[in-house]
Amino acid sequence: MKLTKRGKEFLIATIAGTIVASVVDITIILALCLSLVFAAVLSEIMLIRSSSDNIGIERESSHVSCFKGEKISCKLIVHSGRRRFVKISLSKLVPPQGVDAEIAQIEQSNFNLQFKPRFSGRFFGLSALFELNDPLQLFKKTIEFNAADFYVDCYPDSILREIATTRPLSVSLGELQGSSHGAGSEFYAVDEYRGMTDSKNIFWNKVASMPDERLLVKMRVANIQKTISLALLNSSERGQDTFAWIDSVCEGVGSIGKATLQIGCNVEIRFDSMSQVTTRFATDLHELSEAIMEMSTSHLSNLDNASSLLAGADICITGFKELQNELLASVVARKPALLIEDTGVTPNQISELSIIYSPYKNLSALVNRVAGI
Image (cartoon, rainbow, N blue to C red; front, side):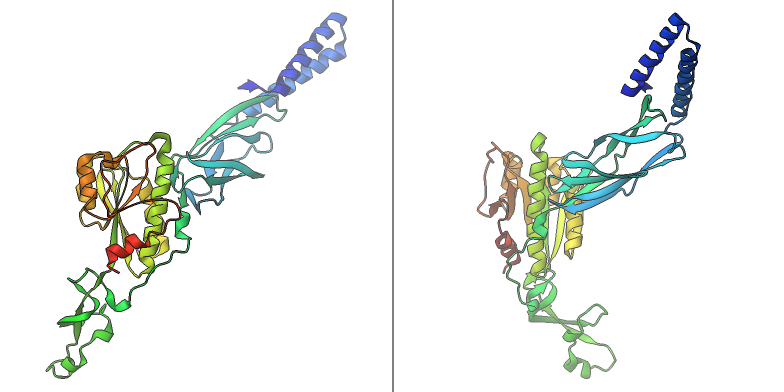
């Protein structure tokens, strides 16, 4: 419990009045001073009885999301039966790191917060300090609000950007290139019809000669694989540059992912989460955005997991710091890769299959190389 500026002035005036009344023996002034003291004590009691037990603070939602450069709002709602006696104000706001925030508007018991992320990615944490004042605003006390599980998702704007791609013929798409069931042009086998099989592939000539009512379909070789897999290798500490580096990763994956979806393929994103390889699939831009957000908080805790991450991945996304490791650099050099620069860092080697990321670079060539277009 502390005195406000107004409370200090009130206290000085009360003491001065009491001294004057004692010296000149003016009863009315003394009575006035006693009344002021009584009012101050009563006002203080009202504030003392106000605490986190009878004042509740909650957030409107557990997370908010937007694209980079946009602003998004969230409310902190105060529940208090003593609202008309105790003034509640938001004196300090600490948003997630990498996110700017301000108090946009106050509506009765609602504090409207506005967030603007500086980078793309997922950002955790929110804390606020509320100041409580008594009815006479002579005293003040604080209540802390912490929400470690609150997070802000900022999607990369590469997902919104127009990307020029060469879409292959639909007859060339399949699960695995040249080795599995697909819709390619080369007919190689006959199988029984199943509910999910495209009815246009029913082998009617063969069905007509069948003694039973089974339906047979033509199976064809896939010329282009149906899913392109991306693997993130993020194993280095980058300090203050972490947010900017992750921002480039998100933008790069967003660009590759959108180009992949535009040619009719699905996207698979692989990353290390809690020392385990986590896989997220995306068949549209919404799923791609959510997968990128989850990926943005991942970190390769053990280089031994790198081989598991890269197994089956078509494109590797990593940084110059990771490529300082000779063994890891040699592994990455064997497949197409998107490399994110680290200032002042020279990689051990850069393969001809790799592309160094820069903003607004069209990464369709990397996708086309993997897809075989």
